[in-house]
Image (cartoon, rainbow, N blue to C red; front, top):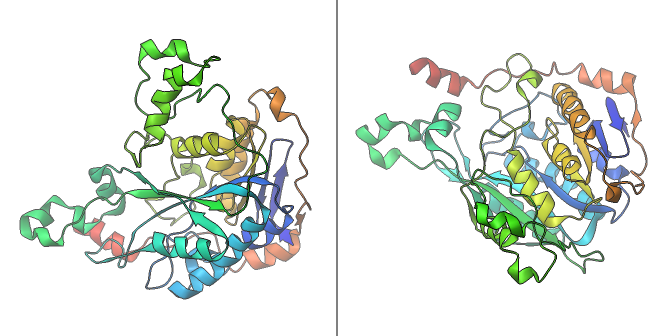
Length: 361
């Protein structure tokens, strides 16, 4: 097993390599949670957004079937590493079949659900993450979201599709229950906790009386998350190579913070196999957990190094000091991987379809 680069500390381990290989280094049933956003596959082959031209890149699958055959290897590996009864949370969405053009959509989440159920997971109800329509239109140049389309023929319009966070619980009894002795202590969202409830924060008495935590929980337990701060993302602009997708955007930190705090204990290892610029690892460390991430694209990995280093400067709490065995440390094989990386230049042409729409606008 090889990777281009790696950074391993007592609080996080991140690798510039192929998750199909790096995930194998994790010991069996050692992981507290898995959370990530995979490339969004289209039924016509490839993905909605392509991140590189590497044959190892899941976004370059030639067919829908090939995508899920490739993806299955990753799910098998993190299912092995995840503790029984724990959660793998996947961020996804319904995917347009023809990009920005007016077209039908494919049930990409349904395929993800089927795959996880085949590999020993139970699906839990999905969370819908609201998206602001004009922002989606400006980012994706979707013709079906243009006001002009409702004027000309409203049958060819559609909504700004929600994102989903789908939790999958690995079958088996959880050996280490995830507890919140004093309820939820922080709210990750755009609303303001009522002032009169702050006196209950960290309530040590009967938790039925913990109105602060109850307020947060009512927001988190809703199936419709319309309070996610859409602009609360890690720095990512610096990670773009020339010609990269104009509308690439990392998943919001509020989503990671909620999932990680809800479903893990302090000190647990949180795995992000499609790390990108390191949002899941960053959130894990900032919330007193340990982060593990793997990213194939060098420019994304380099930005993740910066982002995770910033999180690592947060003072260590007592419950974070226990040692963790990261498993077999992937060896950095510069020569071998460099030869392979020469096959692609870490850049992608902007989608012709979207460029044409932009020119039209």
